[in-house]
Image (tube, rainbow, N blue to C red; front, side, top):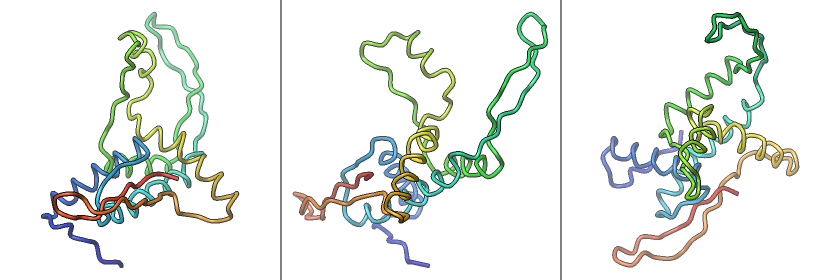
Length: 170
């Protein structure tokens, strides 16, 4: 097992820092950080993306009978996760911070509420609906797996001289 970098921090701060940076990277697609941190973030982010690629399409459609507000029995088609996808979803939720969708500048409260009413965990949904299909298609085209991130060097940081980089999703 490869040795993890300590990043000059106590273990609780280091875990929080990496969780935050991985969450930011997956939400925004790119972040600016130091080279050592980027290398740690890369390994964690790629594992989470691989989990999304392997599990994003494992769902089943079931018919459920529910009572509506009038007390009538109504049958509905519901899409449920298979156990392996549910496990993957819970692993992601245990590691990533929970982000909420941002309200647009010209968007009213009602429109925002309507747009986000069915999405409880936007970042997890983004992983399964956007990154999973995108990177599986990329893997099939290139006949490879992995390599979902890119690190671009920017040079030394003014002040302490730490090597700054931009890490982004490919």
